[in-house]
Structures are given as structure tokens and as C-alpha cells.
Length: 451
Image 1 (cartoon, rainbow, N blue to C red):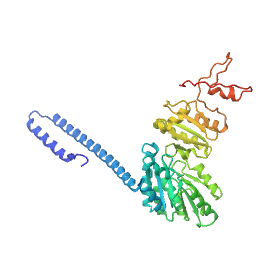
Image 2: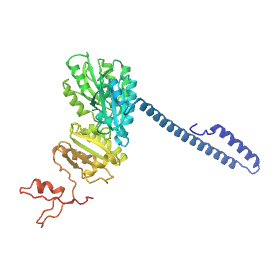
Image 3: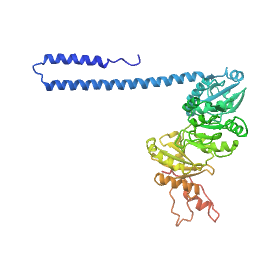
Image 4: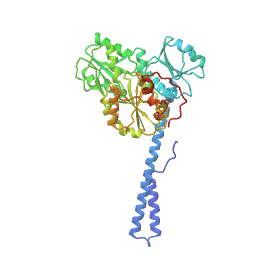
């Protein structure tokens, strides 16, 4: 057994009752009503303590059971993924029409994050009856095989179709891997015909695009299918039933032609109002697929950086502090939809937070900070007032209108009043060098540490 068995509460009650009866018999002459009441109170306290211990133990047993189940599921999933090596790699890829390979290194943090997602995706694909074979290769242990497969970094995902590889371009959660794999192997859209199917679909998918068509044919439908095939991240579903469409998108107004995106966040439903052209649909998705405030992770960082929304605001805060800030921040984000993208990073997560904060000379910061990047021009900005919702809104307005200054990691501005040679620091570089009407000879000096 995993845990030692405890006596039941009933057994303990009987034992304690007998002991009390014996005690009463021995001390009958000295007993009075007050002591009997005290003994009864003691018994109640003992039983209450015992019940509390029982509940704690049951909780521990349940927690252990859950962890054991998760480990068992992960172990099973990892067994589904074929381990490649020097002997079997070529044969596996040559003899199977569809193979997805994960190239990893044991020491790589991103590989460690991705591997359980990859294993979970393999399980889901097998349950869906996909012919895709999922395999992984320790590229550090087998460098020649990795070179042959064109695995150059970690982690690398490749899809082999009849021996020819193509780079993976999807997201990195298990669900996103499944969506991408199915799209690239012939299932770009799921057709839903009944209300029951729609209800089951909703249990499994957090985000999707829904298309309602009177008939699954014609130019509008063809554009929809092309968009579904071209998109690498979002599950597309189609239906010709208005009843089914209302289950998936309750706010639907159209009856025979409709497209919308559904997300698991406050702005859950967004309707597409453009013409049914492939590029227009894809652009709509690019601007609407992220939540109002996105938590940056190792798995979604590539998608965030490649967003067409180039003004990006990053809020660094401790997890508990951010819970209080989230709702007002979402209110601010609504005012800048499609213009400014909002991200949250746990300031205590060194892997994610520190590289950003180092750019501002704030790598030791522990309290809430707000920064911004214009990825179009590689400029960076820092909110230098308290990170209140109103100040963040004003900061974002300044970003949009170009009325706030870019931030430079800089030493304090020196006093050049009587200097024959002017000292230049980050904060004065534009004024004294770039915008100077005179020719400037600039000598670079070693930078002192900025605290």
C-alpha cells in the first residue's frame, strides 16, 4: 500500500468510550457532573482532531494519485514517440509517408518545455487516427544524424512528407502542434454537423475560427479553405447549420454566410466584417488572435515577436501583484485594440524577464515596471511614473502619437557648462550628436557600471 492504514473513526470512538467508562468506574466517588462534561469535551476534541487528520491524509492521497496519474499519462505519451538513433533514422523517414521529428538536446531548457507538449500531441494524433508518425532525436548524442536531417538548433521540429522535410511554423502547445500537423497532412478544417458534436468540440478547444456556409462550395468557401490551409495556428471549423453555429458562436446574427473567431478570454467573440478573400481573412486573424493581455512564455514568444502589431507594451510584475492589475489593464488594452499589443512577464522569471530588463539597466528590479518596444524601428521606452492604469493609458497614447522619448540605458547627464570637451551619455546623444548643427568628433570611452 502507498499509505499506512489508519483505524476508522468508529473503532476509535468505541475504544475511547470504553476507556472513559473504566475511568468513571474507578473514580465514581470523586466524579461529579462537571468532570463528566470535561471528559465529554475532551472526547469531542479528540474526534475532531482525528477527522481533521483523516481529511488531510485523504487530500495527500488524492494529490499523490493525481501526480501518479499525470506521470503515467506522460510516460505513456512518451512511449508513443519513436526514439531515433544512428541505425533507424533513415529507415523510419524513408519507409513512412508522414513523420514529424523533434530534434532536442538534454541540456536545452526550451527542449525540456517542449518535449511533454510534443508527447501529448502524439497521443492526441493517435487517438484521432492520424497516420503521422511522431519521432524524436537526441541531436547532441547523434550529431551526424542531426546534420543529415538539417537540425541546426534546439529544439527543432520538422515534418517529413515522403522523405522531404519542411520546417515547423506553428505554436508550441500540444493543441497547436496537433492543429498544425493535421492541417499539413490533409485536415485543414473540421466539419461539424450536429449540436452534440459542437458541444463536444467546445470542451476540447479554447480558440477557433468558425465559418457558416449555406453550401460548401463557391468562391467564398474556397477562400475560407485557403485561409484555413495557410494559417498555422488556429483550428478552423465549418457548418451549414445555424443551430450548430449558435452553439459555437452564440452572438451570431447572419444565417447563411458568416466568419468569426472565438477565444477563451473576456473578448471572446470577434466577427469578421470584410470580404471573403484569403489574405483579408488571414490579416483579420493576425490582428485578433491574441488576448487583450498575453502572458509571454517560452512557447509563445516567437508568435508574439512576429505579430504585425509592432508597438508592444510589456508589464513586468510579480504574479500576485499582476492579479490585481489584470482587469484594469484589460480595460486599457481595449482602447488600443489592433494598435498596441500588451504582454505580461513574471518579473521573478529570470529566463524571460532578465534579458528585457537588462536592456534598461533594470535587471535587479523586483517591483512592477512597464516598458514598450517599437519593433518597426527597434526603439524602446520606459514608463517612468507609477504603473497605474491611467499612467499606462497615457504612456500608450504617447507611444501612438510619438510624443514620448525613447529610453537609453544611460549614465546621469553630466554638467558640460564650462567644459571644452563635451561628455555625451545615452540621454544626451540625440541632442549633442545626431541633431547638432555642427560636425561632431565622437570618442568612445569605456562605460562605467550604471546602477
